[in-house]
Image 1 (cartoon, one colour):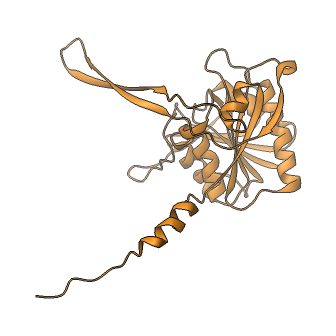
Image 2 (image 1 turned 60 degrees about the vertical axis):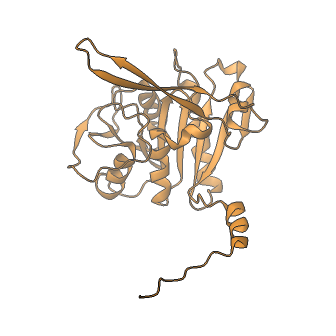
Length: 259
């Protein structure tokens, strides 16, 4: 197989290195990743400045690798349109330090890297470890290989990507694999107003988790109970329920008459 790997933690991330090491033994591995951390960039793409890519070496690896000044979505586009010699069989984004769950998916650079792969019509996976402290990547990397093999065997629906979150636990404590749906949990944003040593005001955006219950079958529920959460995500964001309800509104358009 031919694999394109990106992330949002940057080319020096240990999570990316673990993913590269896992796939080098099973396929032709290419890496296009940001030269610095680009977390929480969402699906930003670069339109107003040049994109640059330079060849780098991933420690302990012979993978073909580039670091760029772009976002994760930029990295995938660069790989698809220019840097790779041929179309990859799969795109992987990660392994992210910390989970990507619930409504946070809209901010995630990791998920957006996989989303860009799906936009190009390539089966794509975003994969994260559910801890910011002392994360280990061995289980996530090994599971990514097995999941890619399953995708290549069974396929994915068009315009679908997979968002995977792996508990930061010992192998024997992993409860299993759960196919999940996205939770409704979100962060309630807060803005802290501060003053720097020169007396100038600045702001720090922060927040707290909303008090929403972890409903059974959701990504947050699965991860909190030691399951590897695999959530299929679709690019079609249409709300069919709202569309059905709005048809009863009888919306019309009447152009204004000339006076």
